[in-house]
Amino acid sequence: MVTALTKDIVKDWLEEVKDPEIPVLSLNDLGVITNIDVSPDHKVVVNMTPTFTGCPAMDVMQQDVKDVLEKRGISDYEVIVSFETQWNSNMISEKGRIALKDFGLAPPPGHDMIVDIDIIERAKCPHCDSEDTEMKTPFGPTLCRSMHYCNSCQQAFEQFKPI
Image (cartoon, rainbow, N blue to C red; front, side):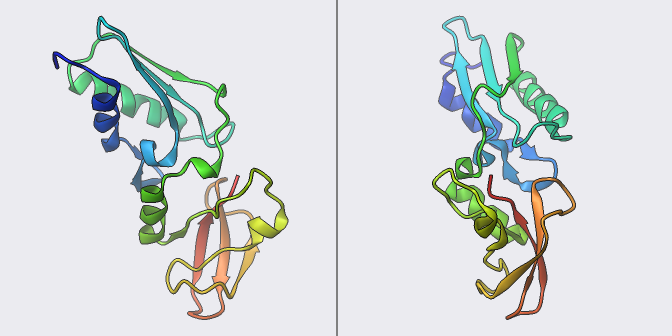
């Protein structure tokens, strides 16, 4: 057990918890971990917000957080999944955006909380950085992805949808 347990230590531990569908992206960088609280008696409370209602990966992510806490000797903890903080794609960190691109997924563009069809249709190719792309379908292999095609390098790619 760590003697001076802090929120930052727990956050560092949770770096090893990855999105099960995008294993290069930590939950911290995805923005799913929305709060960590460590009480003076070392009870840890982790708040998580799904990227969308009904995310099938949420139970796995929640269990992975519990597993990391238990592996570090934390037995008094609570992992809360709630929509109190509404997730949006602007919560993906810069490190997370780079990880998405390196994984071959176009990161969602930043937005001013107004997401219309224009922002959903636009995607920068993660392979050649061209903006000469077109959306083929807003439905990808998961609900949080859409399918695009790059007219420059002629490769299909997925985009993490802006929300």
